[in-house]
Length: 190
Image (cartoon, rainbow, N blue to C red; front, top):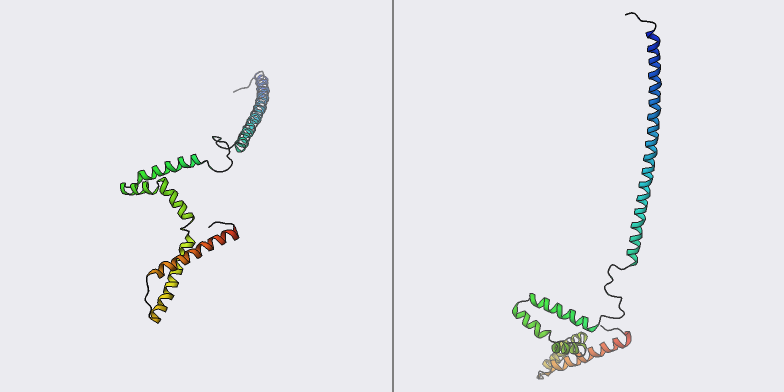
């Protein structure tokens, strides 16, 4: 093939034009990439701002939740629980538990948890049937009756049967005195 001199310059010109067009295209692409990077940077900045604002909102809500109690159904009370609420709760719990008992146990529970029986039991438990008094009575009954029995057998005396009851009463009184003195000295109930 022979090359035509006129074709060469035109092909060189074409080549130069193509290179210039490619450079222009490359510059446009660079500008587009720069714009895209700027847009991405602005978007990421906006996203970061939104995330920071969301985090602040969450922190404010958490702080507000800490300041407020979880449920404000009833205002804070001073003192103990009122008597009527205690009685309502007691009746509700007794009925629920008695519903789970067998018929015999349920009848016994109803007798035991009668108001008159409970009041009597509380009074007796707080005065006469103190644990320390009963323990002291039992121990003194054992020790004193053992001593009286040994003495009676040694000297040949007959026992009447009141020795155990009398020794228990003596020990019981000593136990009550001990409870009273402990209450007076320490100021604490058992």
